[in-house]
Image 1 (tube, rainbow, N blue to C red):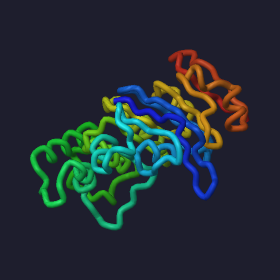
Image 2 (cartoon, rainbow, N blue to C red):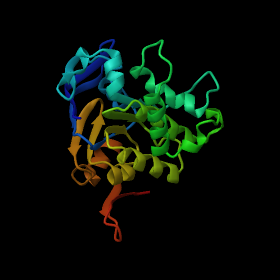
Image 3 (cartoon, rainbow, N blue to C red):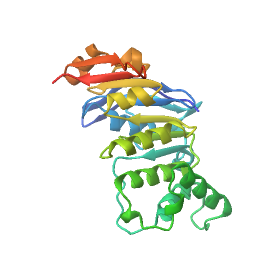
Image 4 (tube, one colour):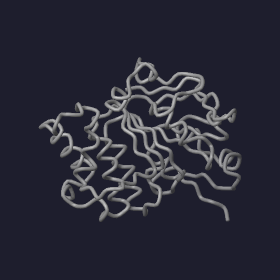
Length: 253
C-alpha cells in the first residue's frame, strides 16, 4: 500500500514544524527518516498516522485522503510504534499485543478466534510467542520493543510507522528490530538516528532539517560526506565496506 504526503505542512502557534514535505513510501518498502533532533521527524510521523491534521497539504493512504477516513479505519490500516509506550497497569504480554485488535472489534465484543490467531501470528513473527503469559514490566528494553511491534502487527496493518524504534537498545536488539520491520511485509516508515543502520535496512532515505526535506533517494544517493557535514555539522568518511560492500559512515574525531 502506497503512503504519500503531498506538500504537507504543520504549525503550532505560527511556528512551522513541518514545512511543505512531500514523500512517498512504495508498497512493501522501508523508508528511513533521518535528521538531527528537532528536524520534524516525529511530527511528520504523527501526520502520516493521522494523529494530527496537516495545516496544509494532503496525506494519502493508497487512493484515500487520510482526512476522509474515520479514526477506526485508519487504525485498522496503519500501525504506530512510538518512542515510549508506558503503562500505568501491569499487563501481561498477551494483553499488550491484544490492544492491536481493538480497531477490529466493537466495544462490547470479546476476543474472538480471529483475534487470537492474529495475536499468536504477531507474537510468533516478533519472537515473543513464549512470553505471552509473562508480565510486560519484567521484559528487557529490546523485548518490550518487540512486543510493541507485535501489537502494531496484530492490527494487520498495511503501513507501519515507527518513531526511533532502536532508541536505547544494544546493537543486537537494534539489528533484530530493524530486521523484523524489514521482513514484516508491510510498507514501513521509521525515524532513525543511526546512519549506518538506515543505509543497511532502508530502501529509501528522506532527510529532514528545520522541518523541510533536504535530500531524498536511495541510501547511496543520499548519505554523502557533504550531506553529513551540512545537516549534522560534523565530518565523516562515507565509504563502502571492503568485505561486505555496505555503505558505511565513519565519524572523524
